[in-house]
Image 1: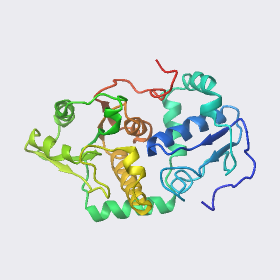
Image 2: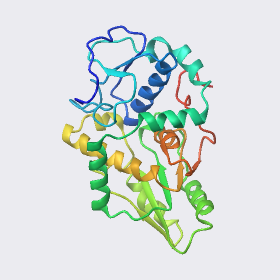
Image 3: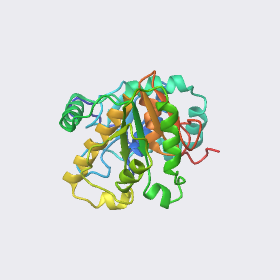
Length: 281
């Protein structure tokens, strides 16, 4: 965190972003949207990164490199999402996908410590070159009604489409918050599909639940964060990705994947950065 510009200003400033105790990618998008909004006027954005689901951990400052025109502040601020929501939505709706991906590449660069931890975890898991990466979200996203449960058959169909021109063996990385899915998807997969996973530090047999996660020990949550980032790192570099755009993770992968990566959502067919915004139709 010491490499970031620290400011004691930012109190009630127009361009401010305050993180919350919601999920990792939810906060990544909150930060990214605020950053985009502040950049339109080439103004400093004040980031209040003192609150997250992990105590004494800065979700942005401790993970990513410092982008242009962002300063950290611990002061109470007027958050862009809370006070400029209409202007924010109107502005974001004008941005092209090309511009969004370009800015995401600038903003979401892992710092040296994060990248070292990620690569060490992946190397110890002996993950091979992956042909197709899949993210399957369940848990509270579905029980809360934010997204519909997608049948595993839909993912199988998407894999078949992407694997039609592959050789005999197809290496698939499965990122999921629901450990019960692993055996189920293997049962209906093709014989030449080889699934790869890394065992999560905090396993959820019925999918991720944010309240349950928030109640865990801090050291376990930090381990889970770096596990999550390692899986994101793997999927970002896959030549093919299958996901859901109703999930923040799927949308984050859309913005941060390699330029030539093919990505397919099995629910919402078209990407929008505004998918979860209050004024989005």
